[in-house]
Amino acid sequence: MFGTVSDEREVSVPASEAWKLYGGLRLANFVGEELPGLLSKIHVVQGDGGVGTILEVFYPPGTEGLMSYKEKFTVVDDEKRVKEAEVVEGGYLDLGFTMYRVRFEVIEKDGISNNQCITRATIEYEVKDEAAAALVSIQPLVTVMQAAADYLQKNYNK
Image 1: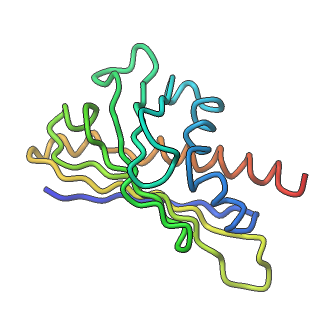
Image 2: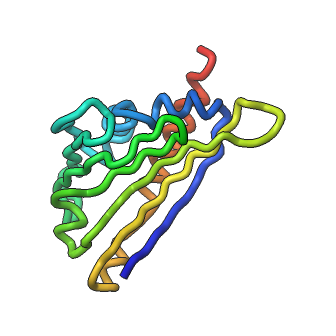
């Protein structure tokens, strides 16, 4: 079974400014520092934030069913402002998923002002057992996008 789920947030900063946070390793560092209840640690296994970068992501102690996973950046497109990472070890793969991919997009908002954009997070997954699909939740990524939006709006033009 293939599935997808997504959500988006409007952010009152230019897309180019939001991409500075989303486009490389800054987002991983931001999540580790600002949202320790979501993820306890993010370790760069290899890479500099471009395609091929591998992160090991650790859940907080006591998280049911998951300890950690490794993800690999498969797309980092600075022109289109799209970043994709696929789980390559542990995590959802240990729960029966054959593919689990997260995509972040930063989209320029049309209009008079260049000071607004939309951030979108999408999860794409493939799983053999349909019951396991119930484990997929966009909510953690919504939490990341909202915290990032708050941070960007607070710190833009400072």
